[in-house]
Image 1 (cartoon, rainbow over the protein chains, first blue to last red):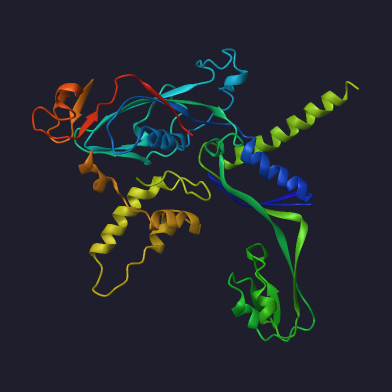
Image 2: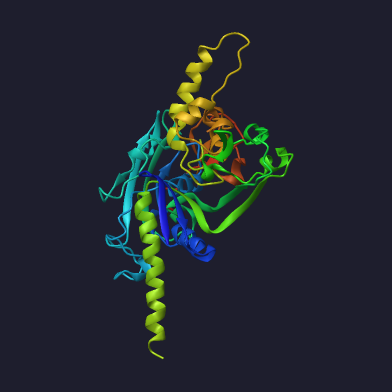
Length: 262
Length: 71
Length: 45
């Protein structure tokens, strides 16, 4: 297995994983989407709401706000000592109280845990006109992406095969493919056609169409994958990849433990 | 109100909504007669890359002020 | 049952049998029910 990191930022990672099977690449993707637990608002207790939004709409909006998550500090309600009743080990409550005229932002949510706070401060929740009021308590808990999309720590995470572009000897340097390629993959270098940035290629086959001699062939490498991972800020991209792999490993360990009994 | 996340990919786009709106308004004010309003570079600058997220901001119409008198 | 008049915004207690659905202050025929004071639990999904 080989890993080449193209980009590693707080909220975005791009890397090439090679010498693995498509099944493994897909299991990593699926683990990132649905196996990394994340805090999100589960239900909202509304005391007063005279805003233009319905109670249900308001709570849906609140549920989608990403919260900074420290998964080591919290447990799933079902696995908690309180048996799902709700305690400080499995729940965080966020209160919101505002009166118009103002715009209520995600930063106005006051959390009972200073570490579990909205990641983005400027998300408008509702605009209040004079005399309108919103008073509520939102309760957040840990959840998995397979339960609801709000518990997914990643957005737009996926992979594609690494393209294989081969330029045959029939190439007559007409340079048609250089203009045809929308991503600018080709370059003429010292009288020869070369591929500059292979990972940019989107396999659109415009170059094949443009080539009169049929010198260019496109294929995909089934053992190398370009991954893109974008997080919503609840974790860093690095942490998500790490805990996704740990959850896969944990499952394999579980299985081998069961098998050892036979 | 602007949706919190992009419908398609789930990226939180409402974070940049207020800045986007104020920058577009600023540009509208300084627009020459007959000039077409272009906001692509503002979206790029705010980190809204994909077309699914871009349409969220581009096509949004704020309805709160329309609804408010009928409370 | 306490309602609010949609026209003059006054709190109205109505007696259906006596006068029908009508605001005693302005005669408006549209009354709205006020939000109850209990806490409403709404799931965020």
